[in-house]
Length: 316
Image (cartoon, rainbow, N blue to C red):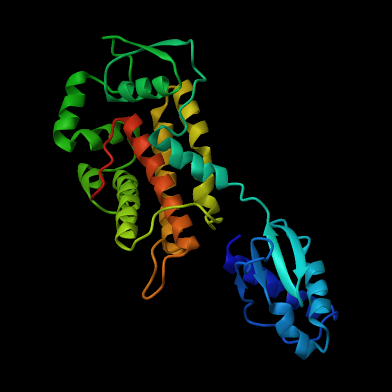
């Protein structure tokens, strides 16, 4: 829960108290939520009860008690305490994605690798798709034996060579993994949103650009508070299971589709939650946390593309 989320939650509690007739006061447009002052308690505090005490004709602590009863049931709030003349102090429930983001940042492009296939030996033939299968198997600790037998779905070696010559290595591999990704060669080579390969690689490049831009502004990534991006966070959480399934079933196309999903959700997050300060705004906890999520996304995209045998450029 971000400070803005908590402010809206407090305002909803005031509105509910007024609607139920236990508090007679105007509902504020927003509640000021900030870090507790030195000696304070919890993660955040608000003085909204003190602001409402006069209009309500009640002691501030009594107003705070009413609001606390309205807030206790919120799952995102672990506890509400009243301090001083009537401050509400909030302890937030642990962010379920807190460990996830930190794990991705720590493991980098190897996030999601495991040992579920340890002890298994798998024979893999030639070709770009088979190469991707081999890398997925190795990422799950399988032993891979390469053979000259073309048991892959790549088609004749000559055909693959022609495809690489026509499209370049990366686009050729992507087209082999997702044959329906584009109707024509131009679709695979075009730098536009409808090109899924471009979309995935551009998402990665954008995460790297955000890191460079943040450094120019004097701040670095640090996941210090929850970020409101459940779709993107959920996709990152799914990554290990996708890698395992792709390896077990010898289906690298599963990973390609997943990377497209991650990219799509990253752009939605990017558009809804500015990672960099705007105008005269100073870098804040929110910016550092959003940058951490962006960097975690970049690591997943880079690691996934590498397993498929496709480059992840920092500039596009």
